[in-house]
Amino acid sequence: MGADLLERIREELSRGMPRAVVSAWFADAFVVSAGDQVLTLCSPTEYKRGVIEARYMPHLADAMLAISGVPYEIRLVDAPPPGKTEESGPREAQTDDTGPDRRDFVFERFVVGESNKFAYSAAQAVADSPGEAYNPLFLYGGSGLGKTHLLYAILNRVRRERPRFKTLLFSAERFTNDLVAAIQAKQTANFREQYRSADLLLVDDIQSIAGRDFSQEEFFHTFNTLYDEDKQVVLTSDRLPRDLQKIEERLRTRFEWGLTVDVKPPDFETRVAIVRSKALQLGLPLPAEVAEYIAQAITSNVRQLEGTVKKLMASRDLMSSATDLPAAQAVVADMIRESPGLNPTPQLIVSEVCAFYRLDERQITGKSRQAELVTARQTAMYLIRDMTDLSLEHIGEKVFSRDHSTVLHSIQRVEERRRDDPAYDNDIKTIAENIRGV
Image 1 (cartoon, rainbow, N blue to C red):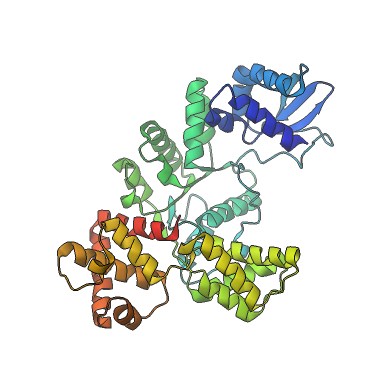
Image 2 (cartoon, rainbow, N blue to C red):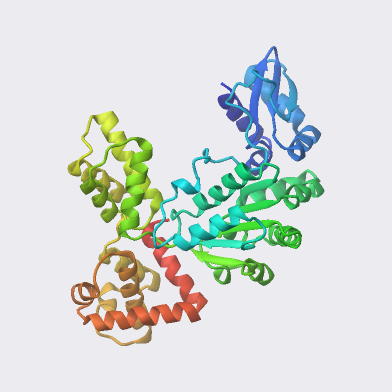
């Protein structure tokens, strides 16, 4: 009842104020009780309770009147009395828990392979010695590769082993929303105290503050305060600091002060291990040939690998299907129809490269040596090699009618250019995102 009521309250509040404001102040609140015309809400941080009490109590009363048709007294508490909670209990005060429960995002459940071993080890080092090992730790890579899992794994270990630490985990988008709401409520001093008093600050998708000058200004000073006090900062992003567009140079420089680690797409063996691990967590018996088939078919995204296993389990439970190879093939076919980039074909990759460079496919596979066509052709060869399991010989002969040595030279040329030309590197990432549909 509590969750449904709170959702209705948020909807009513959103009729009279921006949704970003409602989200900023009420996303982590929950209903303690709503009887005898008294609504008791829990808001877990003193900072937010102060703002709600100063500015939003009349709005809450109006919302309850609209919902129930009778006036309600509004009470705000920091924790529910024992036995009075209508939900499962208070949310942690020290983290942004607006998303799903992620207490199971721990190091023990992170599947380690060659693609993510370095990132995993760095995250463990930070969790074991926050503020001492690598500060800041900057994890970057594509969507669905495990960056957020590592972020929460650090948080969960530090909370377990250092319970007196003040920890904050939030998205960069949330930071901006909180800042906007604080400015509107004239509570920027409290906002700064909230964020700059953390012992461990973890920020997901830091690239989201790009182009937001005031957010960058605030985060710059927040970062400096914590860094100067040897407090640990961990950041995730979809790309290297130097490739972040519309981010101030002084911030990019600070992001590189510590350790920057790439979280890469998993190789085949790691994908198999991820599939088996997820099946084990769900209690789903999975034959080896099924695990290997899924890992072969879904190549670019850990989240989608896990989603495929969940869908296979749902098919078994709801349709009484077997968890055999034909069932897995049907599930994978559905997943790929919904998102072709899960298992990109050479044709899809060539098509996306041509769309990006505004070329015809016959031009990119033809013999012309015009500079623009050579760039597009080499880019396509590189991405096919990176996003599929095809050999150099197959790429050269079957896709481009060229020798494998030409493909190898193209890949090497692209790798060199990505290192030296940030704009081109960004083009590669954009095309890859278009292919994956992320």
